[in-house]
Image 1 (spheres, one colour):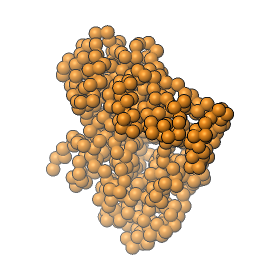
Image 2 (cartoon, one colour):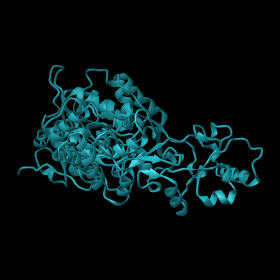
Image 3 (tube, one colour):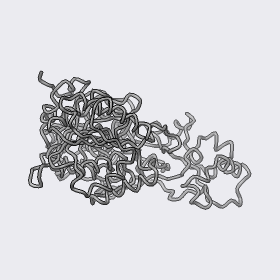
Amino acid sequence: MNFKENESAQKLRGGYYTPSDLAAFIARWVKQIEPKHVLEPSCGDGVFFGALAELEGFEKTKVTGFELDAEEAEKARARSRDLGLKAAIHAQDFLEWAIENRADPRVRFDAVVGNPPFVRYQYLPEPFQERAEQIFKEMNLPFTKHTNAWVPFILASMSLLRPGGRLAMVVPAEIIHVTHAQSLRSYLGRECRRLVIIDPEEIWFSDTLQGAVILLAEKRASDTEKAEGLGMVPVKGREFLSHDPADVFNMPKAINGRTVEGKWTRALLNVETRSLFDQLTEHKDVHRFEDIAKVDVGIVTGANKFFLVPDETVSTYKLDKFAHPMFGRSEHCPGVIYDERQHRTNAEKGNPTNFLWFTGREEGMSKSVRDYISAGEAQKLHTRYKCRVRSPWYTVPSVYSTEIGMLKRAHDTPRLILNTMGAYTTDTAYRIRTTKIAAEKLVGAFINPLTSLSAELEGRHYGGGVLELIPSEIEKLVIPLTERAVVDLRELDKGIRSLSTHRVLERQGRIILGALGLSREDQHRVLEGWRSLRDRRHRTSSEEIAFDA
């Protein structure tokens, strides 16, 4: 878990400024509607002002900017004066101003440009948290405290945009897939005539792992105008910046329906793969995960380094009575079976293979055990939230194991783990219980191209490209199950440990998808759909749209 005190001032302020060439591209696009009044809700030191000032005829356009940092706001004022722009820069919180003015129909903008702050809700001061929540409430949209500052910034900006106006912003790439942005995605899908995401292969902000995209949104001119949907433009390098922004905006075919209503990851697939995926989800032998299994989080300790220890710690403090086998990281289980052999291997490497489960009855505890608990208190572990709400603090609730485990995060594709020795798992993993089929059957069937593609569509990823799934996303995964598919679990375990993920999925596709009656060509299509999304997540390769000169 990240804590506020460990983050840089730049990250807490969300101060990652837009490269000038991207700002120039955005400015050219909004200039095409000849805006009379432009909003920049987070102007920083005024990088977008320079881009706007370079456009012929823009000296007559009124610009309204907001920047919370007074020093940066003064830089923006000085820059606007030097450039000859008609700009009014407010050193105040944009959301506060938006709440006060958005109900006034006279306060509307022709265009919005910018790069909203990338700040987690938990890092925002309380007044800003309240304003962020109020924006959702006033717009009748579901709110979650997992949100990020850029989400209410875009919502407020769109609500201040006149019909037919344009919004162009550099936003986190996670707008495509994170759950906390679903309200925003749905709102944009309803309110905009057309949406386009320019999706780069590379990372634009060199000092952060945060991927970013350009969002181009044109608001519907009237309630009767049709919403075309969403288009994706994958790009590599900066070559796209030399083209007319109108051509880039109009280039991709817009996709509507479930693609815009849910996560936008679907729009990254070609139409043939999307259609095939949708057909397979309706197959009688393809099931949603929630219909065949239950998901629960692992054991929440509040201090994993204290409760998860290697054999050496157990021996030093004589903790054998309280030590139980556990796993919780991918290196602890490189295959799909966690058994005595794998447990011994982990222990020999000095991994923390023991979960300490204290009963809370201090009487009868040896001095060495009490010394260990005192050592934890010396580190102030008992003051941590998850620990201090327990009495005594070192007693962990909800301790049980399940026959199947699943790590929360995956590099290539998620997998289920058959837990043959009843090991415990912490909240780095999920506890899975089947409801209709044998555990071995589910673990073997889970590894296949269709389920892997489903995981890419339902999951999310952040800096570094690691795929993460929360329980509600796991429940939506599709699993092909048929008696005609027979998976040798030991052979699968061996293959995962020794072969590439692509090879394993290809082989599993022949067994499992072939049993559904899927042709080799369609098996390959599903596999390539997974590969393309996996590679985009890893930023290892990308198919860019060719621009005609």
